[in-house]
Length: 222
Image (cartoon, rainbow, N blue to C red; front, top):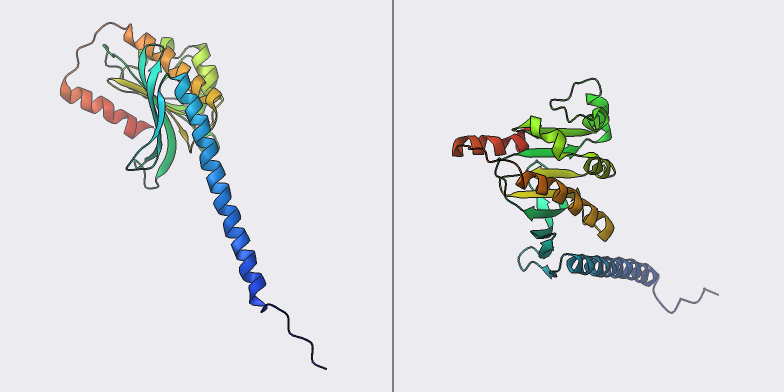
């Protein structure tokens, strides 16, 4: 006798399997987005601000205060290089009377190997730190006091950290969407420590042309 046909066609099992997979992925994305929002809401409280979703980009953002500085935290995508760079960026607005420009980025493992025999362009006074970071500045002699022991120790922890000091802002960046309030707060403490020292520097007159050239140092050197 021929075998009885199943209640459901054979392809139904495949469809159900795909539905379960797609549903699981969708639920994971919902959970991931919700957990990130909870963490950023906590971070907003730390900054005495509010977490919002940008209407255009749908990215998270926070505006608040940190130790008296106007503070900003954003989920962003950089387009400085050929490949878009999704990252988290925290920044503080400040006064920069000496117009110090600085760019700093932790080297990748490959870059560490490639540059291990090269002398650092800027000497921060810490040989090991100089081996781990690309650093550029328009006034390199000012960097050693700005990058104290606590600052250097904190920055060494993060293999993808970047710090940029511009004419009226200092910021940190890390790859992807950060999900640790402790790490974000530590990086704010780092840029605050640098920022408060920058604000105390004596004024230095800089032409608009020189200012633009100094800002370009970051893109060229880091």
